[in-house]
Image 1 (cartoon, rainbow, N blue to C red):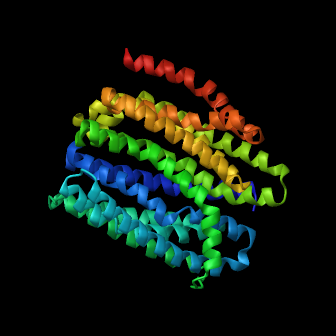
Image 2: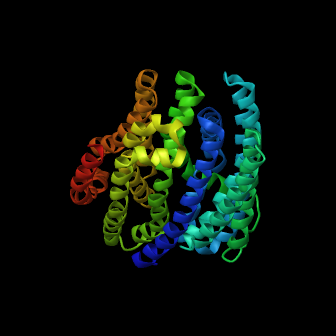
Image 3: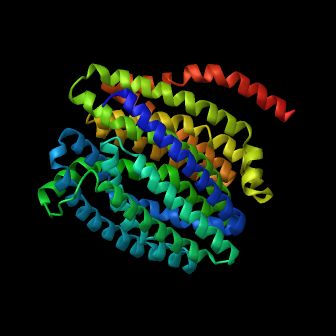
Length: 436
């Protein structure tokens, strides 16, 4: 396992993800244009709510599985089988909790009914995460990409069919559950070539997984706060239309954030290997990863920000143009997001999950406070500002408080300097030219 293999695996992942990004954007375009800002706002609010329960169903166990397989491949079959049973238990708990808690919220009955249906997908999503950890551990995520492309293609065809039938919003939630089932069985089919799960209820393994994963689960909880709490606050302060406008631009930003996530997933096994053996290569691998991904992401961020108005109009139409300035601001959060992805991977590989938790909790605290202050007055603009600022807060906190990880914090920020020097000046000139 070397860095060239990571780059190759990432290249396959990004190529496949590029296809899925295009399909994802196409589905979003179809949904937003068909549903409109209000109905799309309802659709987005349902998944903003359920995202908090998704983390219960997975609980960060998939990341611990990758690390365990890299360290000891002989116990992989038992680990996967036991983990699948554990995730089935956790997903059942998450579904029950989501159905109970929603009845205490002041959501319309229609939204509650949508949540009842969409929550069923949590069971299949958690099991899929276990199988994809097998691909990640073996640096064979091309199989995950194949499943994603096939499932997304099926989703496109069914979405078009539903639109032609002028289907109600309810049927799109049913479709999402169906696609989650397709993804699960697709991942299960390919995973059998690497591991045959040995199903066993081993409480010792369960406790070990939960003990190691709870900081990741809690970190994921704080990350979800950053990514989704703004939509829930927007609903309370501004209504469904604002949620629809904002979630439409969030989907654009998150489409490109898939790239650093793919790279981070690929490089993680290599970081783990170097930490266990050749520690001198750990920093080198981390720096190379930051360098490669920064020269991909920085020009993307600049171009999307510059052409935000035209992108919104092209994708969603005139009714979503009110979100152009919010997209311009929110896109810059991707700079901090992608460095944060690799920062989290190196901390996880070195057994420093507690710092991921501290960073994520700081981000979340700033995010909630800023959203509560800015959204009532500035709406989706305030939400974009809050997200962009809050991504910086966690690493500043880690730098100030923890001397042992300062090098990783500094490296994650230094990687931005050179590509910004190269791409930002021509970007500013281009922006001034098209704004004139």
